[in-house]
Length: 86
Image: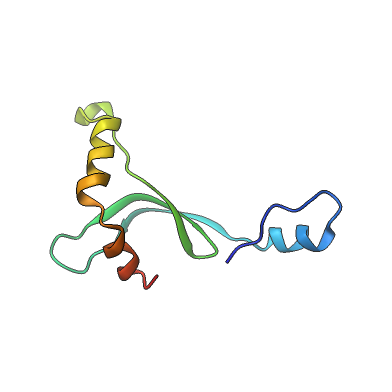
């Protein structure tokens, strides 16, 4: 899946760790239906989604509480994992 951080003197582990591919995608869609559900940001390691973010800002009068509520009510982890075949 991914290579862990190496110990100081382990050259092979360092080489493997450097093979990890970290990437970030914004507006990651996870539904094919008309709802077009998306995650604001998703961090991947070697193509596997490991962290998602729901971004809010003061201009839309939303805060962290809105993001938490959105995860609780709108983010079905089963639907996300099924969409990506996990």
